[in-house]
Image 1 (cartoon, helix red, strand yellow):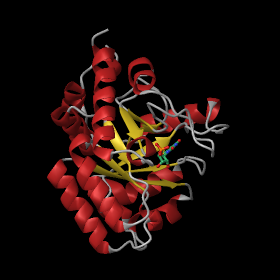
Image 2 (image 1 turned 90 degrees about the vertical axis):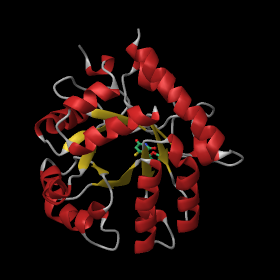
Image 3 (image 1 turned 135 degrees about the vertical axis):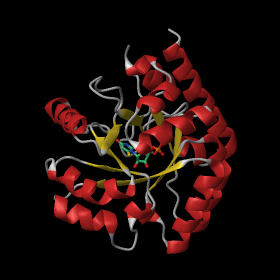
Image 4 (image 1 turned 90 degrees about the horizontal axis):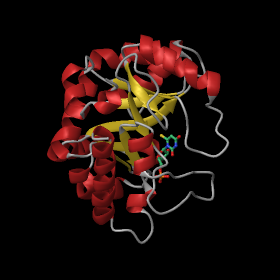
Length: 260
Ligand code: S5P
């Protein structure tokens, strides 16, 4: 039986990675496969948004380096909200350098990403050493990594043989828990796909973003988590209403996939 036909609960029970186990358990408890991409500019906005939308999401995805007034207290408060609302933290750092450099970027600097982000991601453009470098820092802390096997934007170059290489590297590295991409990529082990570029209303933006619906992504393509940003907090939107709508749409798309 394909992983796409199994429940999140079943997959969590048989998974060997602690972050993946926890993620599946949260998804089942909250009946949510929604991740919020919280791309706001200040600490206060990020905390307010995370607190409001927290009850409806399984993962809060951050770009911590866009917060103009970042400080260590922001991280402490995000951790409090993650426990309060039962979600994981995913820092969308998109590492892309040699293994030695990404070790420094992941574990150190002012953000100390590995200390608080359950999940982060990387491009494999430098070769497999990037995964090994990140794993040296992340495995002892019980973290997980996603590979950017594809992107959502117009004209993106992660296709064909490059995407295939991502899959091969993911299968043989235990630190990798899955992918950013548009579909389920392999049955060789249970690698989780998270998909950005999800929207119920808009087709895209002026800078190349392209949106597809939860049904296309989860039911048809077998992806596991939908990542939604401006569809939830964009101009004129009520984040709580929209988060509930995307949570319900994502869950319905998942149930439809199970019961077909
Ligand atoms: O291919 C990608 C990969 C990512 S992680 N396309 C993306 O859009 N993202 C991220 O998803 C992007 O950095 C942003 O944080 C989010 C999409 O936001 P939205 O406002 O367009 O939903």
